[in-house]
Figure 1 (cartoon, rainbow, N blue to C red):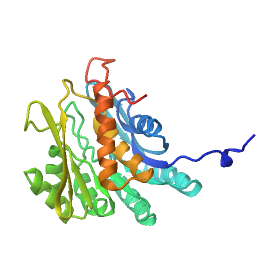
Figure 2: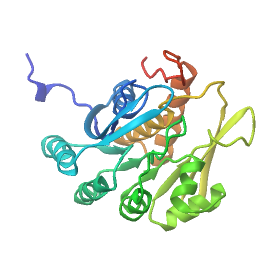
Figure 3: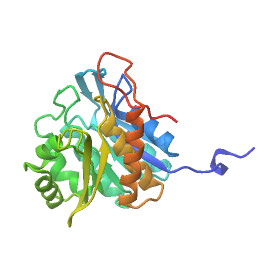
Figure 4: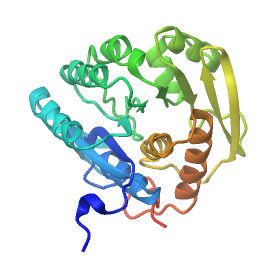
Length: 264
């Protein structure tokens, strides 16, 4: 019998994010997405949350030393092919994340800046936005905000101005999602920006429900395809296909938002 080290390998994505008890978002969303796309998820939990499909009621950040020990245990043991960052939950964790990224500059990084829940609860403590803009944006390969998040991060208003401000602040590329913008009742428009401006845009049929975990799914899928060897544009395009299909097949197990169905 082959030993585990002789078995076929799968790309590994290290996911830094929060735990969602309902399983729609956060680390569980990352694991489901990566597994469905043929990758393996390593995880370092940033915070525990008390939430359901309707909204979050409490957030309990992990101590920075404990978080860092989790991440370093993974990075010291296996080859990590991409890093995905989700909910951070505390300014104290940003320095630890920044140190990890700086120590592994060859690993592509996808950052989903989770600043609020779908129910409207603000998840960005005082000082967190300034810290992540200053310390994390320059270390990321792709950031995946919606327009509301992009406005908070950049201080700008329009999609183009937000993207320009974020690239000026150090982000290599921005996938600006349009689920929270009604430009067209029938469609969602997602735009990919680089330092040279708008490079691509995609139009997707607007689905009839709201979803808990859609942003986590999209960012994790981007990280998966980067880990699998796709270039940035191809990774973003394939990630959108996976996400839209997961949302189209979504279900409503509780009293709030629908959850993506990320399984085959």
